[in-house]
Length: 175
Image (cartoon, rainbow, N blue to C red):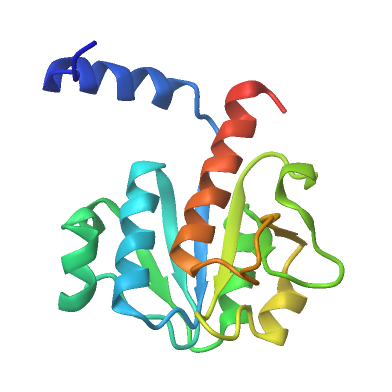
């Protein structure tokens, strides 16, 4: 076994891109750490996120400290900023997305059991507080990433990566 050469890698990515028809977007509700925003942007670019909706308090991907972690992948992204995160959710819905919150909440269902199809905008929240109550109320559905260990929650960038991958994986396997 050997690593793929650049041409083979492009061919592989093109094949998976053809299998991905749904649009995916992200709503960042107060995500304020440059490291987290940069990691989210890099993952978003890798999984073909169409647009970032930046809610209240979310850092811009254009920030210098964000760019260190995103490694320039913000150039593949488009984004819009909103003073209120629920307005960002409304804009995503107007753009044709179902807004799915990622939150440990009483009515949330395990992400792999969430019944959503088509274009999805995944909403992720602040590093310490999660989604604001107003943003949570603006979501069409809410899911969570099941955890087995003693840690109560995941880092927001890690949780976003898992959830984005799950959305794409479901599309690839037809479920």
